[in-house]
Length: 257
Image (cartoon, rainbow, N blue to C red; front, side, top):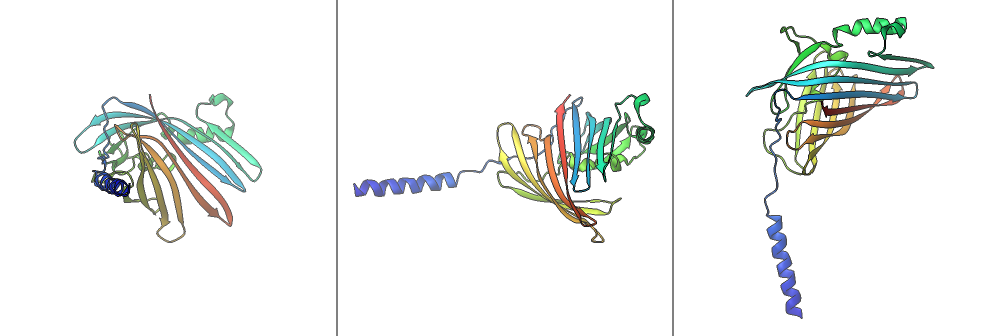
């Protein structure tokens, strides 16, 4: 009996060693796009505070126009902008799909200001590792910066590490927004890999060079396992302004058109 117990323990130890030494599954994170692919991308920004509450939704159409060795060229068209806000007892709203004859004067003014973005076509270039090479250029080559009114395109394409990754792998990336002079340092971590998806957690520190702004955003991205394209992204950020605390939520969804 004793020999059987000892034998069982030895066998269990051997199996543990064998499984422990088994090769860890790794994945080379790389965008795999095809010319002609079209995706509807929705970006929502929700602000919740004691005095101010607002929500904005941007609907865009992403079309893969070219796939080159060093970059993927993607056409971006803003199809719709909508927003609602409430502050100090006053409410406002805007929807670009609303009949202009039914808009208030304030809505018409906003609609006019947004014509340089609405239904305009832009191009962005992203390499296979998710790095944004060129952001928002007109078809005629003129560079445009609609990101103040729209999005930072770097939130749609997260940077991938050069080396293969597996469960628990971490990597860091930095970027700087020159206009707002905010530096973002992000840590990404693989938290789940299944047959269809790769889930990546993110912790980002946003810091102004003068120290006026120092916040941490947390959340996760869900990627398609085959193409590494983003399916969804959810981030939240605690903010404080003039002593008032609030929270900002960013939600991104990508759906094949």
